[in-house]
Length: 51
Figure (cartoon, rainbow, N blue to C red):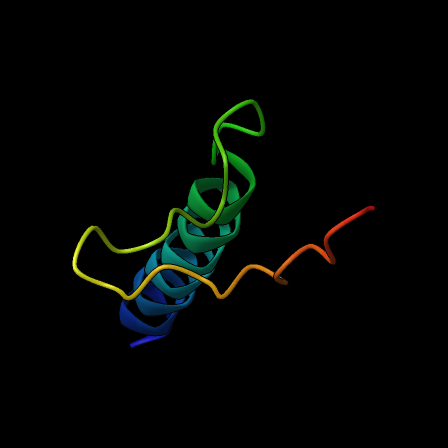
């Protein structure tokens, strides 16, 4: 009976470590947020005319 709980505990820890490593594996060089191509463009302030 102790063998079954040892296997279940080991699998649980392995899955937990795999999730943590997959989160840490995200490539930091890529931008984390890209605007949607269908999203409206952000409003730009209208420049005041210079005389």
